[in-house]
Length: 77
Image 1 (cartoon, rainbow, N blue to C red):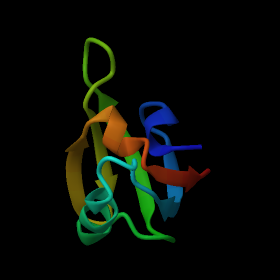
Image 2: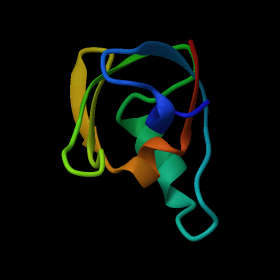
Image 3: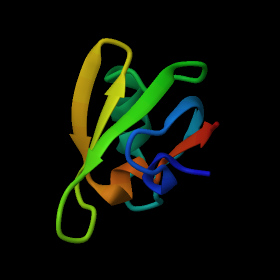
């Protein structure tokens, strides 16, 4: 399951980060801001309308990620 699939308020653990072929640099960027395997993440809220962006907490930081970026983070409940 990906971070983008988590419902509001759900928590999970990061399993891996992958990037779309057209943006391979996203892996390095997401890992640099804290999306590392083993880290706890929580979806705080989804934007309205359409659920974009997602506000997520990883470690002590809070970020707004577009759904396409959150789809790059594989998580486990």
